[in-house]
Image (cartoon, rainbow, N blue to C red):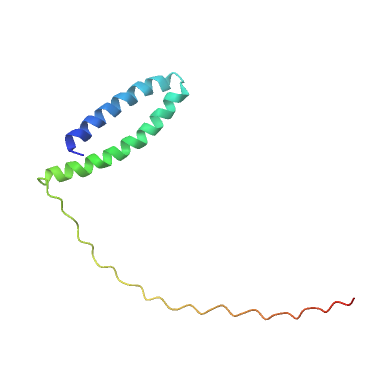
Length: 94
C-alpha cells in the first residue's frame, strides 16, 4: 500500500470513529464496541504508516538492519532423573 492510500484510509477510519464516539457517549453499546475494534485496526494502520513514511523519507529505498551475531550459550547437558525402584506387587490369596 502506498503512503497516500494509507493516509486516506486513516482519515476515513478516524471520521468513522468520531461518529461512533459521539454515539458511544450517549450510551449506545454497539458504538462503543465499534470504537474499541476501530482503535485496534487504527493502531495497525498507524504502524503501517510509520513504516511507509520512513521508506518515503529515505527516497523509496528499503534498508535492512544487519543483525549482530548473538553469543551462543553453552548449556550443560542435563542428567536424566534417576529411575524409581519398582515396588514388588503384593500377592493376593484366593
